[in-house]
Image (cartoon, rainbow, N blue to C red; front, side):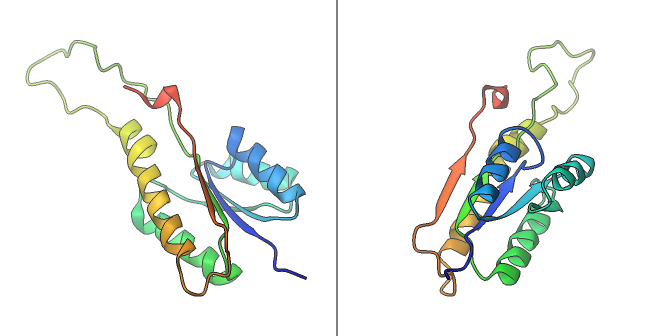
Length: 150
């Protein structure tokens, strides 16, 4: 019997990420959901015991890369990565500052919705190309959201 395919889904503890995780798991995949929200991750795995949750800050290269590495070492393969983590920018770019110079803008939405997606894609490609990865047809999916625009 072939080894189970392995998926990593960032932002996997809720919404589209969780729905994708549940579908892949039902199809026999081993699915790792990565999310910053520990309580959502615990609830997702309570309701879907086949999912594996790791609290992960996608905005931290060290945290994200060590999570990828731990999963690859323990599973021996990586077949699918869904770069799905994202946030809604809460600051209004067009609001007038109370004083000059204005305060530094919060750019967390750019850090998560752009930089972390690039980092996730970079890590996925590196592990897909690893000489000891038996996967022949790796897939990366990236979520694009109107919420990511300033």
